Image (tube, rainbow, N blue to C red; front, side, top):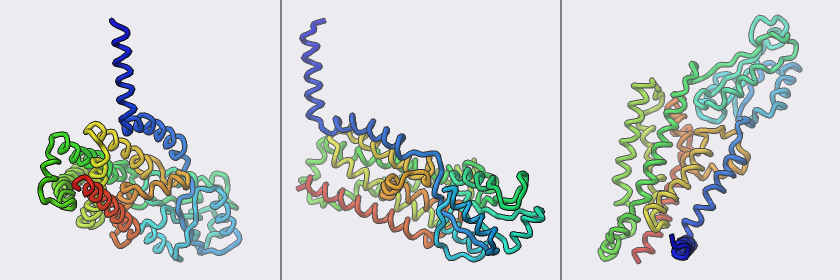
Length: 361
């Protein structure tokens, strides 16, 4: 083996890597992002869950219970107009809160007799991360109750059997669409350029919007087919309910598909090869999977990580699809997430088209 020739090849590869700024950035960026996400943003300790309390007793003991609940740091009480358990349930369905607490009018009598639960905790069963918080609330000592007094009744709404597929299958729709569509479209323009077809397109009167939509529309149909497959298998194999309107499931999925395809087209305008496109697609997977609330509790993330998650399409889609499928919510109940997802898709599509326009020019 000739050491000089070997060293020359190594130096050549290093110089080529230095010129390929995108790949060099990925080498440093991916481990940096993983370290920051897992070390800073991912926190399994659930805190600051959105909640509301209906205090029908309005006594010294009820105020003591409310103060002790706030002191735990588990819940963040929201200003929700609710005076009855029914109104709390409506707030749960709309996704405004994840936990509702009811203190009945005869709270003091229940604490003295210890014959019935003195506090009811209503839990949003569409969010699996809330279950552990409910268990901590159930163990909360109540004033006037004995150590073995079961004074807290936990009611699991929408998933009383606590079956994992009810929560995971709707989220898997978002995961599957993200992993497939971003990568497929991310390599679309790159493949055209590597085959020499992009130069042929430049010579034609095709506009940037026509080229973008022409690349996106076939994958829209593919995405809807994938949604159908997951819904059918989820129903037949795992008995996952679809409590909301099916047309609204597909409407939210369509918005999410467009956002993912737009992100994929944007990646294809940045990458110089199909390998780079795959690297960039993988670079976008991690934040969406880890920060969207699909795997780790959203409530446990620092505020900065929550702000970052709000610009990710999957965060809003997870809320929409779980709300519609599991809680039976309507799109009108979740306007913020619907508008946010539509805005993200529109911005990504516009940026992608503008970048394609520069290439065609």
